Image (cartoon, rainbow, N blue to C red; front, top):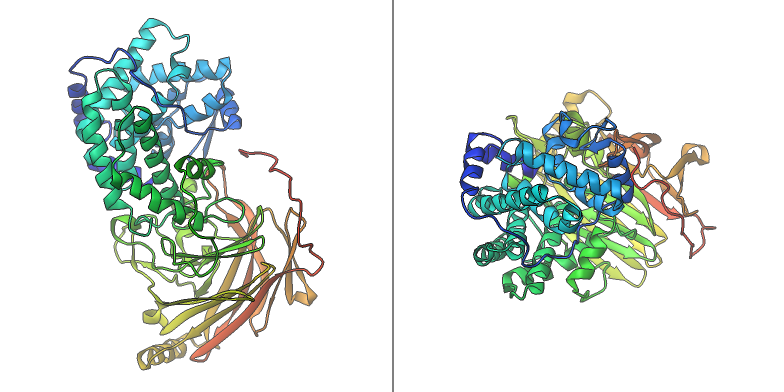
Amino acid sequence: MAAHRASQGSFGAGGWRARLAVWRAARGPVAQGFSSSPEPRSIGLVAKGRQLVAGNFLFAGHLIESPGAGLWDIDPPDADYAAELQGFVWLDDLAALGDAQARARAQGWTTDWIARFGAGRGPGWTPDLTGRRVIRWIHHALFLLNGADRPATEAYYRALTVQTRYLSRHWARAAPGLPRFEALTGLVYAGLSLIGMEPLVAPAVAALATEARAEVDAGGGITTRNPEELLEVFTLLNWAAQALTEAGHPVPNDHLDAIERIAPTLRALRHADGGLARFHGGGKGAEGRLDQALASAGIRPQKPLGHGNAPAMGFVRLSAGRTSIILDAAAPPGGRAGGSAHASTLAMEVTSGRRPLVVNCGSGAPFGTEWRRAGRATPSHSTLGIDGVSSSRFGTGTGDVLEERAAVLTLRQQATPEGAALHAAHDGWALTHGLTHARDLALSSDGRHIVGAETLISLNPQGKARFEQVLTGTGLQGIVFSIRFHLHPDTDSTLDMGGNAVSIALKSGEIWVFRHDSRAKLALEPSVYLERGRLKPRASKQIVLSGFAAEIETRIGWTLAKAQDTPLAIRDLDRDDTPVPL
């Protein structure tokens, strides 16, 4: 949604400029039908469709219960809520439900949108939201038009024609990255599908290829380093390529090359449970989206995932047995890509089979400004933090970009018959405290044992002087640090062995045990899990190792291992009870 805000700010959705642009786009012949229509590829959820039919409107973390009301009778509580309405992704959910009531809602709400907003009013007239909306209108054309009367059908084609011309003239106003990919993919879809819009296809295809070459780097990553956003870009490129192929058009090499670069990166950012690592504002991804995207791309993995591979978009993946670890091993993004960046350098997530174990809290954006900022701070991630100071920090201005960003100084990976290991260090506290944080991880070859070590060290005379200065100024035993391991809310954790260990039970029946070998204090404290689609943060717990750094080098060792009686193979067949919990 941050991308939408950037795009909206550049053009003024719903303002006089948008209305003028739409008025100009309405001048010309109206497409009388489809020359071809791409197969519907967007995935919806039946449970969400039922909620919509019942009048439970859950968008952007807000639930408005209004049975019998129209979707556009709702007064959106914030801009993100309005954007989710205007993007029409909810059509996927109604189509997934697919019964007569769902069809009636979809047709009625689309017709109502045309009457209220079709002339350029409202917040939906930005290139990215228009592209997102056009894709859904075309994906679900049969669903929207089946049984519709002639006036509704004519209004649909007229509105779709206007949106297509609007995109052809204003797609470049979308912010580079995901917003522009949405705008151009919508334009490609419409140009291929609508009678009389064929001349718009070639320039849109060329622009999309140029954008793919510019925005997807050689390693298959994007500048925001948001794994879920990378999946969205990959999905849009796949949809456009499939639509072009089905219509008999060639797909430019730059377009295909970007798809080939992204596929292995997404595989590396995927946990053992099939979900994406949750970093820099991204979630685990919509259910089934990653599987569908990788399958439709048809790009086979060239080498096995695991240790020893180069970082993927700045992340390192260790995997063995049923266990995967994904670690943020690069600086947070800055500049225009840094509006949702997190201070998560050297933070990790751990998943065992189908069950997340150690997580980051996630993006707090759906829950308001305070949660959004809290979710970006270092204490919301599974890593070491110093004295309440994040490893990357906002500047003196009021912007959303992290201006003081931790740089990774060292990254080494090693593979042995016993397993995989890595060493990484960053300088996030070199200026503030004179300290560097190093993290060592080792994963056994059977995936049952993780050995970790955290080191705070002053590396040079300047660092030592700064450390002594801060140490003197605190008046305490040393500089306070905390190492946090946020646990997924579905785990059940307890302090054991007189407070010297933590046992963590997963729903699969696995038991993991956390121990440490230092003077640090071990505690089990409250935490939260920030998850899009819920009304409020989920309560969870976190393992916290806290202590004082009183020397120029402080080392804290820890282990996270499966209990000895946990079997090697587990039949973990239980599904989550509620796909879309409120």
